[in-house]
Length: 423
Image (cartoon, rainbow, N blue to C red; front, side):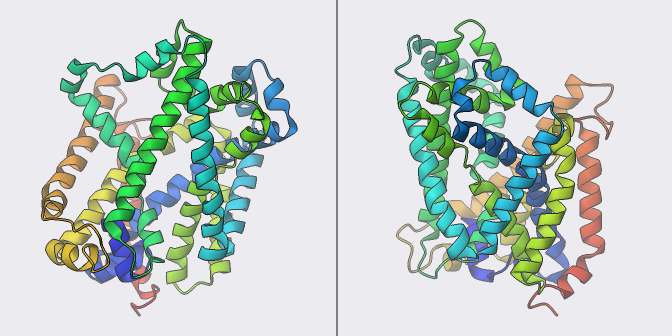
């Protein structure tokens, strides 16, 4: 809700909106929020490239003929320049869509991609629950373990996942808020995003867990619980096997792997920031395109580097969320709620609980989550947790965050001067 309202109020990306809400000297916070999403875009383009590679395999019919999907994945990911090529294809397609503008490009693409993906995941979930032996998968997924609800780690992991998954704290929703009509209902839109996102996540879990347990009953639970590459590739390995058992599965797989909607939003976020700095859309997209091509290469060539960036900037999203809360608090949280969120066009009026959430709950969650994730690393690797060159360490987060924050703080005046409306 906060991000929608900030974008709608300021009509600027993360840098300009923070300067408007908090004053010019705080725009470095908006720079950091935008950079975190852009840093994620650099390696997320690689993920989109994986999907496009599978799209071509599905379109040719090869994917349905493959019997060893683990080997198919490993061969591709270890091929070196294969992931690089499809990374290039992914960012090229995303930039071409965004180049057409919000209505002609992004809105048209998402009107097709989002409902299509939802329909395919729903179909996959329905088919998966009809597989023989699926009961163990559904039991694993849905049998409540009430004692686990007393384990604080369950709640912290859930909060982390949902913050990442819904897109909160990225600045993406803020960027889309720039284009909202005045009559848009912010609370309703925010609620639909959360409901839709978590519904799709649940359906995807049903489809994947059911397929895994139906195919390899022994060891399925360990595979799903395991971190790292085995878990990263669950969707790419198991959903092709599921669609192979659906009439017309080849065509459906082709549609499934056109998963570019998230990458498109990241490209638009970066372009919006540069457009606020008086660049044309075309010029801004050229900068984003070249930067992503180059800075995405390490993640395309190395899963270790990919994991490091996912770790570093995934956790940084919590800091971004804190900055967004701070921006609203400095602007005046009650005034922001009553004037920007509870507009005359809103069917749902948000109460004062929003004020308390922004003042106390979100800052507390951010502090607890960041400290907890760091503490997990310290306990797991007490000898190297400080090492900035470890894949997942406290040191690598602190170093990369500090460099970004220092750069944006030092360049704050220069950035603000070049942002539209702050000459």
